[in-house]
Amino acid sequence: QKEVEQDPGPLSVPEGAIVSLNCTYSNSAFQYFMWYRQYSRKGPELLMYTYSSGNKEDGRFTAQVDKSSKYISLFIRDSQPSDSATYLCAMSAGGNNRLAFGKGNQVVVIP
Amino acid sequence: DAGVIQSPRHEVTEMGQEVTLRCKPISGHDYLFWYRQTMMRGLELLIYFNNNVPIDDSGMPEDRFSAKMPNASFSTLKIQPSEPRDSAVYFCASSLGAGYSPLHFGNGTRLTVT
Image (cartoon, rainbow over all chains, first blue to last red; front, side):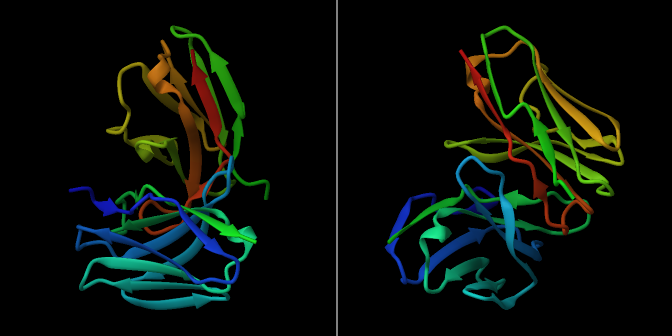
């Protein structure tokens, strides 16, 4: 079993819809959770950062962490064409432990 | 800050040739990472440095791959000899910490080996 599972299947939604993305993980030591956004032919950039369990909201973006289920989610409200990108989840146990990345979800928001 | 700078942006080479990828991290960041991204495998960590010292190179696929960081502002990833299966996008990233600090990525080098 991979450390981080993220269904890479592309997701197409109409503008204004809610986008829901998720990752599961197997390492119970993970306590730092991040979402990166990657535009075509660019490097990933940090979108959301969460420590331990709970929710975090930033504008149209909400990140949720459920450590008991080893499950994290990213929600994008009122999606815009500019949200079209690949979204990668990443997590770590902290210290000198490296970040473990999911494979990424390609999201296309159709005007 | 200019961010992480990688060069070249694109590299096309023939099998068997030596390839050198370059990276300038963000000033003040003491961790530097090299990743490889493909559709099939996603982002794979190849190696990372702390204060210019290699800490974990377990992701380097073969002896054909080598990485150096001679100073805090420069790192190279070398492939010699290159093979078609090395074709991928190679990213450099830097951060203030290993597991808890966000990574700042460059825009990558797209390598094509024919």
